[in-house]
Image (cartoon, rainbow, N blue to C red; front, side, top):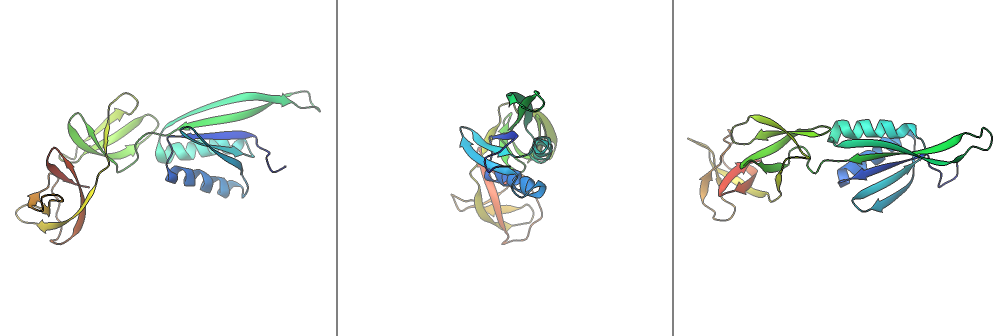
Length: 197
């Protein structure tokens, strides 16, 4: 096999550094030089791989861990001169969800943590009530909360309080836990309420 040889393409979209590292690690496990070339494209990365069999393997592993939509397609590449059969190059599109496990989102006015992600659905856990809901991430509007604040527990009886990151007052959190005073924690602020994450 020459250096630029490839039999298939893994198209990773909506990817993160972690998902790119996952594809590279899976490729290395299967064959040290599995990836012939990587191209950064609009919306993601294309991996040109030396074995078609790797496409189904990587698609199932990435989808199992990160969720998302997987679409296979193939394209005629040429004709085998010995057998006169058509040669196909296969492509797998792995369209990852916009969210990953443990991210915090707002859905229907409530604050949720992403509990799990599968092919087309996301399981969300309500941070205040601890109940879970399953939503289709392609159809529902989920607002991601990126800003996390580091703070400390200031009081743990009768309820848990933390140092407010902007006002520096001791305030209760919505989702109560048993934590020692002085413990470093992360919180998010939504509608003037603090949630432990």
